Every structure is written in structure tokens, then in C-alpha cells.
Length: 107
Image (cartoon, rainbow, N blue to C red; front, top):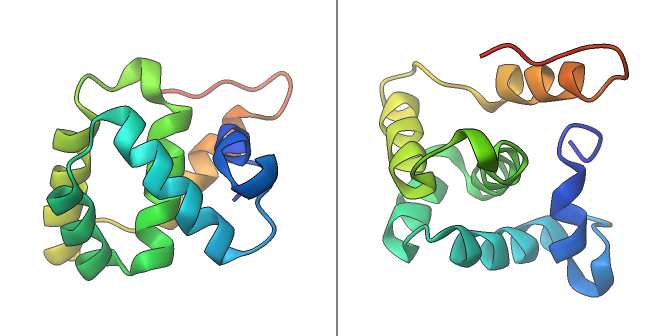
């Protein structure tokens, strides 16, 4: 996850992400910074699980320049999760492939 989304590390306790708890703490900071409402994040946590919602926030941070409304995007992913149409794995894999030198992220 950290290979695909290295920027989230800056927001972890002490500038590190050593475990899921650190990731979830960083996600709360980033959520606020991105303007995602607490209700949108809580809904995502209930639908996806706390770890997956924090991972999605890290992915949104990584793709921030390509996302117009982080909160709207998270709400859309939450609805898609509820319908069984979204899983965080492919999103992470796409970002991981994009972070390999010489590769590029399409989309």
C-alpha cells in the first residue's frame, strides 16, 4: 500500500506509517485536508471497513490532481462498494504500476 501511495506517509504520526493504526490516523488528517466531510468518511468506513476506507483516502491523496471533488469521489466509491461494484485492490494495483519507473497510469 505504501509503495502505491507514498504521500500518505508524510501525514502519519512522526511522518511514518508503521501499522494500520498509523494509516487510519493519517487518513483522518488527509480527509480533513482534502475537504472530505466526516459523514462521507464515516459512511465509507461502514461500507468498506476502516482499513479500506483509509487506503482509499491514501489513493485519493495520491491522485489528488486528477480528482475534482474528493468527497464526491469517496461517496461514489462508497455507493459502488455497497452495490458490490468496487474493491480497493485494483485501485492500489493501478497506482502501484504507475509508481514503477518507466510505467504510467492510464485513466
